[in-house]
Image (cartoon, rainbow, N blue to C red; front, side, top):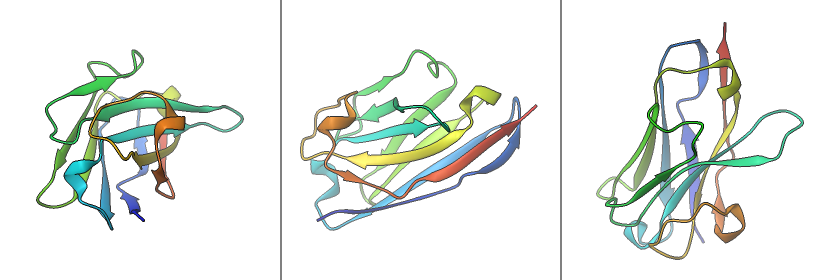
Length: 124
């Protein structure tokens, strides 16, 4: 089993920044690719970003490319999502997820473990 705990969400004005963290326990962290997803009210859960087990490969949704950056510190069992240039449409609950593979993937169905989510609200 893997336990994931997100933190760092909150309320921010448009154009501002937030950094989300996700701490993992229960499995060798570097053996898991990690993903970030988000879900706005009344909408489906969408892919945001993913990072490989080593941290050497990342993939981003087009909507966040150039504004968000994901990274990981395997020594701390933590993955990060740095969010800059936030927009109102970024408002959502953000989830981190882990998969039993080191390879990045955009498909939420290929992730095995999920955190509880953290709310990000962007005001105009």
